[in-house]
Length: 185
Image 1 (cartoon, one colour):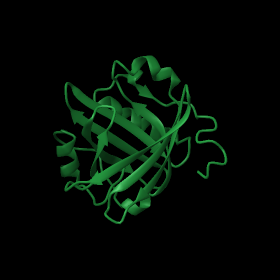
Image 2 (tube, helix red, strand yellow):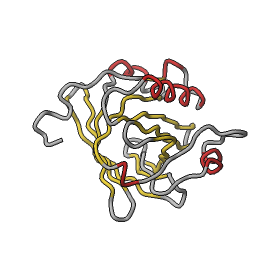
Image 3 (cartoon, helix red, strand yellow):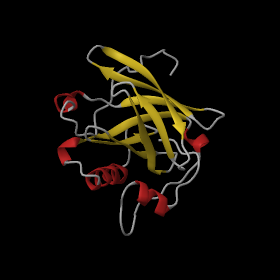
Image 4 (cartoon, helix red, strand yellow):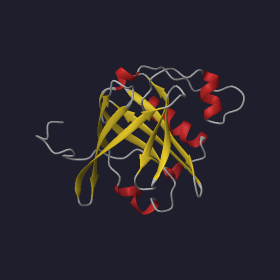
C-alpha cells in the first residue's frame, strides 16, 4: 500500500489486466503513507484460509518510509495464541506504485500495488503473484478501524471485479488489545 511515484490510468489498467475504460486511479506520495493503518477489509480465496475466515480480526500496522523509497510495515495480528507482530520490507520497483516483498509463508517474492487512496482515510491494495496457481489478495486499509460505507462498497466492488466471491470478501470486527495497551503503538 505504498506508492513512491504515480501510475497513470493506462499503466495501472495494464498491470491489473483491465481492458477498455479503467476506473482505478492512484494518487501518490509515499511520505503520506507513513503512520498507523488498520486492515479493515480482506478478500482472499485460498482453500487453506476458508476455515479461518470467521476468526479474522482487524489488524493494525505502522508504516515507516525509508530514505531509499522502500517501506517497512510492522503489522500486529490477533491470533488464537495471542497478538503477534511481523515486519514486512517492501522494496520499490521500476513500476511506479508497485512494490515487492518476500513472503516467508510461500518462500517467494510477491507484488503489491496501491489501487486507490486518499491518504487520510483509506487505501485499497492489491497483492498478486502467479505460482502453482494465481495468488491474488485485495486489502482495504484505513486510518481508523471503521470506514465510511461508500469506501467499504468500493473495496467490495473492486474485489468482485478481481473474481472474488462474496464469501471471500471480509470486513472483520476490531481486535481487542492488539497490539497490547502500553506497547507504545
